[in-house]
Amino acid sequence: MNMAVAKNRRDYSMIQNILMTSFANILIMGVTTLTSIVTARMFGATGKGELAAVLFWPAFISGLAALGLPTSLIYNVKKHRDQLPTYISMSFAVQLPISLIAGIISWFGIPLWLSGYSESVVTIARWYTVSMVPILLLMGVLAASAQGTEKFHIYNLSRLLAPLFNLFGLVALWATGLLTVEKAIMISFAANILVLLGYMFMMRQQIFGSINQLVAQFKTCIHLFSYGIRVYGVELLGTLYNQFDKIIILALLTPMDFGLYSVVYALSRMFNVVQMAITNVIFPKVAGMEQGKVLTLVGRAFRISMVLMTIIIIPSMLIGRFFIGLLFGPEFLQASSTFYLLSLECIVGGGSWILASAFNALGRPGVIVLRQVIALGVTITLFFVLTPLFGLFGIGLALLLGSFVRILMSLISISVIFKMPIRKMLYDRADISFLKDRLREKNILKGAGKDAKLAKDSSHG
Image (cartoon, rainbow, N blue to C red; front, side):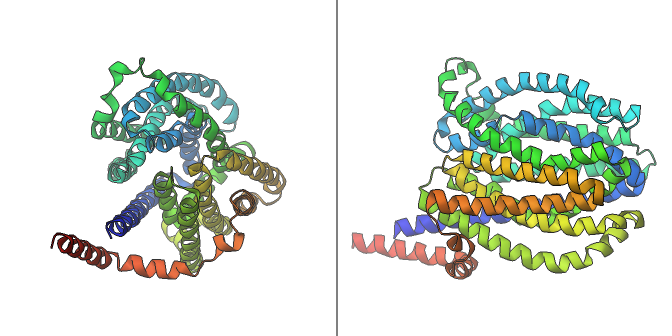
């Protein structure tokens, strides 16, 4: 009976964390959308494109420079929780010099890629990227530490505060008539600094717990870097896959096109809040579990999320064009067809990342590397073929086709490697019973607690 109670509590805890993270994702999406509306209305499509071009580079470069350490930290802290302070300190020690190298490369590379933009935009992009990359890398380590120790309240609060501070600053400048692209960048930088300081304060014990013993405990971190290098391929390809569309637009299209795309892309990501929450929660939960349990939990999360998001996306796409014109302005309506494609891609791509959690949790990230290589090759080829022909619509179509490649390869790999039939991953009639049980979870836990107490009393009687 006690084992049953513990199992119910673990399941309930995972559901709570997914719901909490989903709610945080919805709030973040709402704040981000409001921010996008303010900047779109204030700057127009061209100015919005210039702002998006500056903000793009730090996220892209930090994704390339993370070396898989955040994911490795989540994986290893489940096995060696007592080593968390050492993992954090060692990650900091490695990523700071990496930030310096990334900054030097960015300083000389950004002017080449933004050759179609004004000199002032290029200058801002260079300084902002060099300053923000180390901040984002450190925040990534702290976010992984919070996830690995299942402190999702810290993880979600920190993710929400940065866009919230940014929105408050932008609205204040807009209300006083002082908002410019340069000041918008300064607000973004200040917001991230505040969040980093907050992160460091909330996790100060883990950060400073073993700095004095860092050198002596270097050997304990070998498995951290070993797994990080293995999973880095997945994350590198994931970053390239998620950001290559922006790189293509920067290279082949205009600042106005980038402004249009940044709005509809951000708006389409609202359909990914639940799947992203599941991905963020389920990997820390299933890491270290046996194969059957991992596949059961990941498969159930994949199936339920795909059904729920498909139900949500159909009516949302029908009214999406109306809201684009109402919120952002008539000039953004020319990208509405791209919005439809990106919305579908968001659901398919989100499902593929849930499936990827199974391979990472079972120590097989190399499978996802192969998947990403093939999907990235297909998508990039389609970018160069479809973008000159169809513009932004071609970008959206290439991304959608690439997402289908990823999800199909994931299902086939699960079937071949783990001997799990594809139909089992796509349909399980037990999912309905699971959802009903979770809706009655509180009552079940109370009942189980009473049964356990009665069993204990009877054993003493």
